[in-house]
Image (cartoon, rainbow, N blue to C red; front, side, top):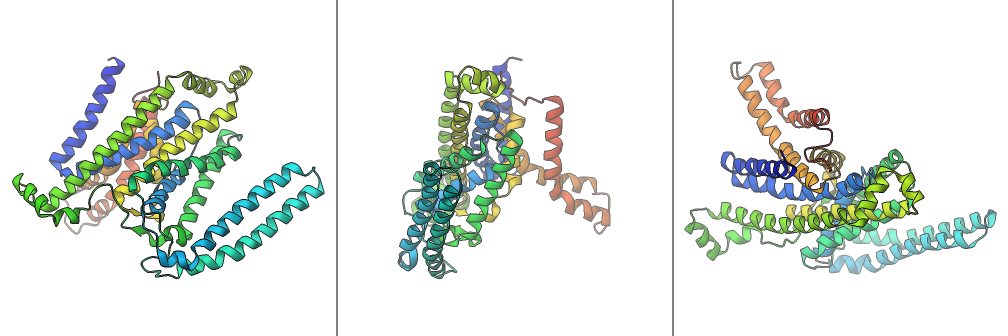
Length: 434
């Protein structure tokens, strides 16, 4: 079987699985799998740039996804005038003081000669800046979070169209990647993994605790969408009439309309990013990145700045993940910091890249669809399987009850088993790098 035939066959299989879900379960479920599959494919595409092309072990994917989600709040939510009046300017001033303190300490460490004068000077700048920052920032935060804490308690955003938040999410993730890369890319791969994981946990902790910015664990709901809310469509007489003409009730028609609209938007983004990634992969820059990945020593001997190139692709991959995070939060219409878990937003994305084929952009996209389909469908299939196996047993049988209640764990068991089988029989993935 040729490579093109294999690629076409595997993507056709994905299409059959999604369409089959529509016939067997519901078209709402099929479109949900499609939309989240598109977002997952974009995430795995970003990770594939870092690992498959450059060999960078980033296990902090979760943090970049969360930053993309934060961008939707900062960009699209309307500002809260009362909260801004209570302490908005002081919060901004405090943040500027913090940034200025860090910048001044870096400047001093470079300009002052080594020895005790440098140590004492930097410590004095940091101590003075920290005290000034606390005196300015903390009272303002308390004042903002005291404003209608049940419904608001945060500054809000800029009130701009939600689609602007998608590239901004990429920029936020890219900025965080630059900071992480400048400090951690010189480390060995295992230390880089530990550093990125730790920093991603710090990002999530900030989102959970800084209520003034994103309401913390109280969540931000009602995030504006590029498409109308279903309830608005159901209250539109013309839409209800059009739905009746094709034999659909308003609830089903509105849900399908919104999900199909999201599928079109997400497909456009995925195709654009995939095209750009393929262009980069097949360019001299892409060949240089693979050469660095395969033999850093030889690349350095040829005069390549390996650390700078690693920083470039680390930023690019993180930006793509940030865009996907903004898209996912837009689809959910809410930001829930507590939902960002390493299992879902780091481990699962890595499984997608490994299963699809690291180093191959089309493989990463394929892995995103297949692994997400399994992640969603394994639990209901497992429940059905347990019910079939235990059908001869009595309703109150302890073994039957235990097996049916344990069906939820089939997801983790199946994903682990699937990954082991893939590593055993196809270690380079379904669509390996040529």
